Image (cartoon, rainbow, N blue to C red; front, side, top):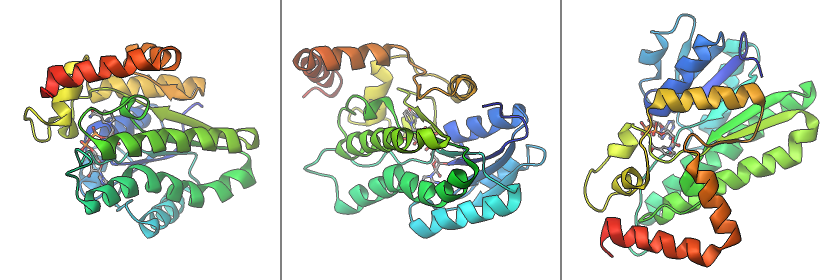
Length: 260
Ligand SMILES: NC(=O)c1ccc[n+]([C@@H]2O[C@H](COP(=O)([O-])OP(=O)(O)OC[C@H]3O[C@@H](n4cnc5c(N)ncnc54)[C@H](O)[C@@H]3O)[C@@H](O)[C@H]2O)c1
């Protein structure tokens, strides 16, 4: 898809990967709506013609309103990027239920709620593009975090479901699955037990702008996965061909990084 002149919405655009995506799309001539709990307006003021909206995508109503307000601002939404995410929760024995609920609401349900309000217009037009930020954790496992592993796996599954179900009707889908990216989420709780430290030791930590460039190349090509860390494709291959060896390797990484 050529982004020039297209109406684009990015959630979680107040900082981090979402901000970098919004800036990259704007630089390619897209008309961009940036949405976040807070801070999207501050970023939008630095991008000529961009609009910032406060939006909470952890509820169906928040997504419905966002789609409605973005259509009012843009005329139509050509590309919706469900990027907002939370990296909360740890071991299954310790994670409180409210952290599971919020993880599923933001990392998974937000994607299907957005799609629910986008699809009718896209199916009428026979055209639309849904992108989501999952994670390499959604293809593999997030060592130390049950909620992140489950919700990111579900986000990948939902993107695949959309691509299969609506691809022939003109809906394009891409799914971003990075390992470490240098954002606030990666550095939250920089301690020995944090998921961020596991991710940092698993491979190169990329800058958000590099990830956004990889996303733009994928949108140009209209292909499904965005894997800014190319080694992730190799891990997926190993997992598919020799799952026990892959699980053993993941346990070894856990022992090395978490000492258990
Ligand atoms: N940083 C990494 O290493 C990494 C790796 C893989 C995937 N991801 C994913 O990338 C995405 C972006 O994360 P990031 O790294 O830029 O982290 P970040 O914490 O800097 O940004 C996340 C953004 O999502 C917003 N958000 C959270 N809950 C929201 C809600 N209910 N409604 C609206 N916005 C909400 C936050 O306010 C924040 O601006 C997330 O989905 C994350 O899981 C990050």
